Structures are given as structure tokens and as C-alpha cells.
Image 1 (cartoon, one colour):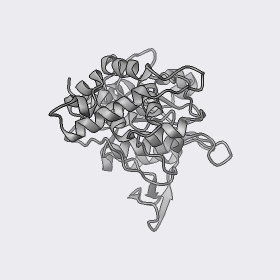
Image 2 (image 1 turned 45 degrees about the vertical axis):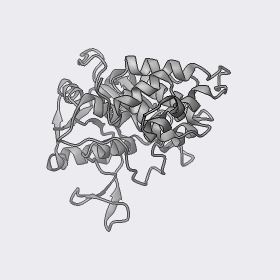
Image 3 (image 1 turned 90 degrees about the vertical axis):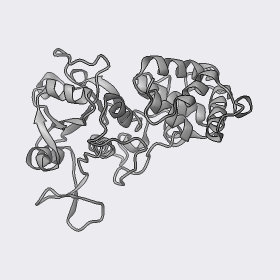
Image 4 (image 1 turned 45 degrees about the horizontal axis):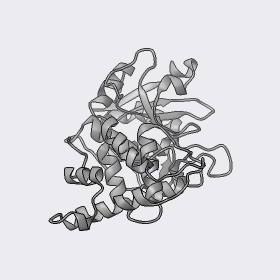
Length: 309
């Protein structure tokens, strides 16, 4: 089984639960990973619903390896979690993110920020750019790598995308799209020159922040210069399934627009009734949903799709 940036030996250690003392002849890195894993598996604790975490992590590892296309993502995140007291929460949080099951850890749960911190995920203020651990570029595209790049941000739990951070109705769909497309080396910028559309950095002269409505306009007016092209819904799913970054955009003049990341579908197909599969920040934080379950029919008809290919 090919893993995304994770040596297959780590997978064997994960499944066997061996520590460094039991792995004679293994490298120091493998031993460290074994200790981290044992820490996550052995620590007692209770989740917010009152259940025990002991044993659940082991079950989660097995299900991740068997049922997802991104086993590398969970193993890489666990490696960066360290042997601190929050590694069990990191593991279960990553599990919930990849399989869409919260196990009691919602975005407002008390462990939400601990999950992202322990897993080494970017948790900076939304206005600050972050560096992703898992990246891709035009020379290295695959559905598995694209899924891993999306899932590493743990959008459901990451405080970077939490709703109402400023004490009012504010959401961060544009920041999530910025983060994912940057990780894919196909940045849809958050800072840009309004006159020219040129992507800029925070603090640059003439740099303006781009909201979802502005992202829609930027993709329409300037996207082609930076590799983005408008496509149909079925083409959007096909490109995403091939590992190319794809986004949706809705403009709502006088109100909040919305942008999403189109992610590879689990069955590798496009569902004409339900539409594309997406990950998004916003009032509804999800790492995998059908667009029709998130948008009303009136909004769905106004969606534009853009692929970087």
C-alpha cells in the first residue's frame, strides 16, 4: 500500500504497536514513532460523552488503514503529535476528520483546539498565512495526495476556521480555500491588488483582503492567468478525482458569498443527483459532504466551478 510521505515501516509498527525496545534493529525514527503510538493507545481518559478512549485509538487506526484513501495523513499527523498528553485526542480527532465521525469532539468541544495543536496543524489567526506539512504541485497530482492536503487542516476542529471569532457572524470559507490551494501550489490568494488582481502578501503595499465574493470575481477575471479555468460540475468532480485542486464559488452581492474545496469522491464517481463532494469552512464545517446537502437548490444553480489543471 502506497502511503503519502510515510514509510511503510511506520504502518507495520502502527499495526503491531511495537515500541523501540521491541524493535531490535529498527531505526531511531521508527522507535520514536512506536513510543508515540503506544502513548496514544495506552493513556486512559474520557471523551466529552463519557466514553473511554482506551482501545478506541487502536480500533481507529485499523479502520483508517482499511477504509480511507489517506492512511499517510493520520500517521504523519500522529508522528508530529509527540508523546504529550494530548496525543490520544490528536489521533481521535484526525480519525473523525478523515471519516466524518466526531466521536464527541465538535468544533466547539473543549478538546477542539488541543486536537489541532497536538497534531501540529496550522492554528494561526485567519489573517496569517500558514505552512502546510502536506503539499502537491503540478508535477505531483493524485487523489490520495489531494485528499491528504485537504484533510491535514482538520477543518471541523481547527480554531483557525471557528465561527464567530470576532464576536459577530463571521465565517472563514475563504481562508480554508486559501490554505488548501496554497498547499496545492495553486494559491487563490487572500491578499491581492484590487486593481490588477495580482496576489500579494500581508503587509504589501496596496494589499487588500479577499472575501468570498472577491474570490468569485478574481477567479472569473484573473484566474486563467494563474492556471484556474471554469468547468462544469461533472468536470469539476473529474478533475478533483484526478488530484487537481478544484473550488466552487458563489457570489451574493450585498451579502456573504461562499467558496468551497471540491474533494475527491469516495467512490471515484460524480453523482448527478447530489452533485460534487466538497470540504468547507463556514457556518457548517465539514471535510466531506455532497454540495446538495449544504446548499439549497436556489443557491446550487448559482455555483461556479473552477479547476487548476
